[in-house]
Amino acid sequence: MPGPIPVIETRGSPYEVGRRIGVAARDAIHDMHRQALSEYGERWETLLQESRPFQEKTQIHLPKVMLELQGCATGAEIPFDDLFLLGVEELLYDEVRSSGDPARAPDLNLATERGKGCSDLAAAPPATRDGHIWLAHNNDLGISAADQLFVTRFRVDGEPEILGVTVGGIFISVGMNSAGLGLTGNQLNANDSRIGVPRLYIVRDILVQTDLDRALASALLPERASSYNNIISSGDGRIVNVEGSAGAVALTWSSETGGVVAHTNHYLDPEMLVFEADPENIAMSASRCARALDYARKYHGVIDFEICQRFVRDHVYAPWSVCKHAGQSVTVFSTLIDLTTRQMWLARGNPCVNDFELYSC
Image 1 (cartoon, one colour):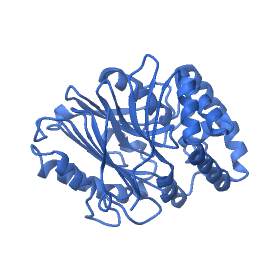
Image 2: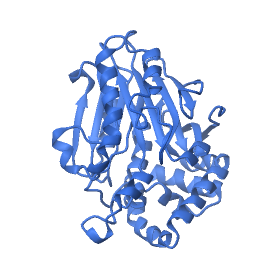
Image 3: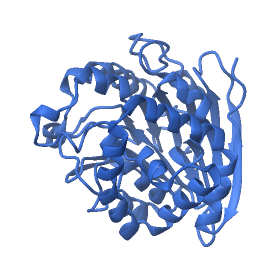
């Protein structure tokens, strides 16, 4: 049985926070770097060149993120350009480079291997039993990512404290902050990805905001390269599902859906369906989404810790179940968040066989 996810705690200037993360997560970051160099081979140098315009956009719009990355590269002792590229999924998944050029379009089987899977159920009153805001999230990645996970607790001078689940200590997957914001969500495959600020770095900026309106503005940055499906929650009881692409977005507020938001890894809003770049693989996401919607309907009004825990352990529709055990990606961690009390429970690996550890912000 895997042990708890290791914790990194730091505060200070953006550069110093990044440097300390790099030192603490050095082995994991080196593993990620070696894997990338092995996978991409000679293409890596080309990708580094293609990532430069993404760096320029990020420097303009998110300079503090760039300082953190520079500090992290120093602490981890790897080239900054390489660390930055590790977070540019738009290039690593061939989304931007293949745009408009059928000869360079990614092979669907390759995209399936590299794709992430995430299942989410988010609930606010009147959908919850205790009046709290509950978030449940399973994260599916390649099995090697299980050894690269950290709980990173950090505060940059003048900003709220962030408690996040990260890959390599620096790349935030989900989390919450001391201002009462929570963020979970799902990878999407859009056909309009472009040069811009990478979606992974926008996640960092969303979580440093002090209220939901500012967090939403961050998610909708006009210069974004692409977008996740970002589920942004606030301690004041609001949840908004931001189903985005590079140039379009559909917003769904929990107040419009009885207090519940459910989502996985494909577009749901009718106006966003034209941006789906991977229609042949929707079935793997749709099965998990169906279960999330089942829970939203069946347990409306009584959603709490126990219901959220039951959801993330669900095996209906296996092997494409919410708790995923087989395939190119498996559930590497599970998160339950009570945003009202700012408590987060994490299970490393499949939550059906591993215990949850409690963290607070």
